[in-house]
Structures are given as structure tokens and as C-alpha cells.
Amino acid sequence: MKPSLVPTIAAAMAALVLTGCVGETGPFPPLDTTKFTLENTDRFVLLDQAAQNSVTCTGVQEVPLSDGRLEVVANVKNRENRRIQVQINCVFKDAQGFSTGDETPWQTLILSEYATEAVRFTAMNTAAKRYTVRVRQAR
Image (cartoon, rainbow, N blue to C red; front, side):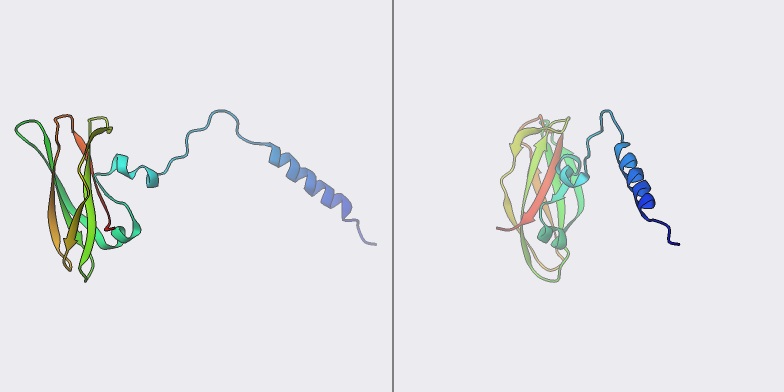
């Protein structure tokens, strides 16, 4: 005699329905990832995949000038065995991380094979306390 599968399937379906109804309620924390907040947290940011593969930063130095403005020097290194061309700029921010409206224009940087170049940026006003140096593939 064969047992009927109908009661077994019905019990399994009921279990699935009841477990699907149980869930968390209440307020949820925002889901965030550092992938989209790098420009707010890091001082040196590579904006595209090509720059990420070719360029690295060996050091960033910030120097307060005598008139209260901020000067930033970034050492940018070519990681490849070929000459590359990238664009670089700096966004100066206040102590809370908001832009002061002082953003340097994009400048072209040509790096020889495995070369390191120091790039200097100076804030135009004394409100700048933080900064983000950004690098992208030359366009």
C-alpha cells in the first residue's frame, strides 16, 4: 500500500507560508557602503577603473601656510611600465567635510614608467581644513 503524498505536500506548503509571514518590524538603519562615500572619507580618490589600475598615492602632505590657507602636496606614482596621462584636482572642504567652493581646475599629469610626481594644491581661502585629491583617466 502506497502512502498518499498529498498530506505531506500540504504540511510543507503550510510551513512555508507561516515562516514567510514572520519578519522584523520597526525602523531600519540605512544600508550604506563605502563604495559611494569615498570622496567624503578618503583624502586620495581614484575615480575610474583605468586610474585605479595605473596610479597610486605614495603620500599626501598638508601644510598650513602662514596666512592660514592650506597647501596639499600629493605624491602620485605610475604603477605601470608605460607612460600614462591622468587628470588630477583637489576639492577643499571645511572642518565638517563640506565643500568650501574652492575646487582646483583639472590639470593633466603625464607620468613616465614607474615615475612618482609631487603635485601641489593651495586653497584660496582660510576656510579649508580638509580636502580630497581626485584622479581620473585623461579625457
